[in-house]
Length: 469
Ligand SMILES: [Zn+2]
Image (cartoon, rainbow, N blue to C red; front, side):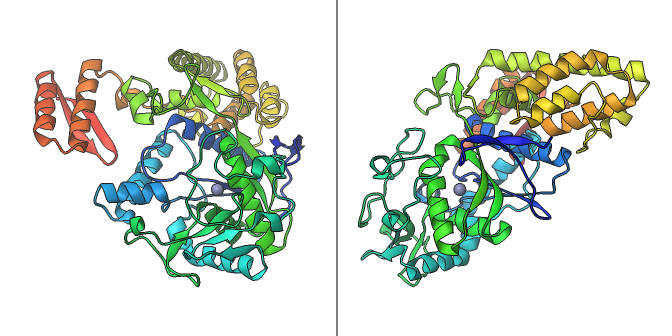
């Protein structure tokens, strides 16, 4: 049996076939204008588990994930802070990478930046104009003409009434509808003519100075790194429309090849304590905020992957506590199995690698559950019932491969903020916030308080560390 997923395009579960030397997987990456929140990470983690599972099954995965480092938000925020776009976005790109690493996510094989692929994007826009799928407007923008592509809407099964606007996405959230003069409200921007508020952030094009529209970057970069037709494309369900519909339209019209993508992998939304995530509710938690509350990145990862990717996950603090106890139960189960088999912990750690080591072991059922539409909750249930039965080295090798597939780290160094008192952690966070706000006096005050409690705080690349003085 091969791993399967639910393909949004065909609306059914399909086994994934690797048709060439590599399995091409493109995932829409972050827009780097602030810290990613746990809703973003839920999607990236679902993709990480899929990739790891495919590796265990023997696929040669080429994982491409882009960095959106130019758009309305990055431009606006960089200007607010008096930084160049590059200075501003690299700061948040570094932060994103550091969070991903803490969450034990594998780095993509290629991670292209939009600003470094302006040429490829312009070439694609030119092709679309030449073939009559796009038109320039007076303000120096270029629009895709939806009416020239009758297949538009195939991914979401939208009728024309729904696609008459690009201003709401498939999660019902408002998009930043741009004020440009297009022929039809359904048409979307491939290239945006320069506006005064863009400041120094513009590039030359055959239609005048401007910058790329967001959708075009994924079409241009995926085809550069994975070819005109590739295997799998992932993203949050909110990207289905219009972003992914637009990607299909751009790519298939520019290259003349169909399909653009064979399998579409969408993950459902995250709720927090039963509510929609929103700025106003203050529940757009970042990794740092949860670590500050005393949870480790490994526990946060466990909580975020423990629901089925196609079902809405209700993220709660109770769920985090459950993740914590599930992991300690799993670790105890492992310790007992090591004892039983005489395998040392170091020896076992070498088993945590991509391997198709499940046949005739007690973990065969867990693996089968995992590859059946990446059913993580079912696989976890089977792991817990099989673990007490593990009695051979082969069983332990299978368990190691499952830990790799899920990215579960049972050996995490809890020292990060492990036994630091909550009061000290809060002071350290307050000092960090003061530092970020450039309130040096206040930051020093907090540092002194931390010292008086017997601790020292150090800046690290992406935050701070606390140690006993
Ligand atoms: Zn994309």
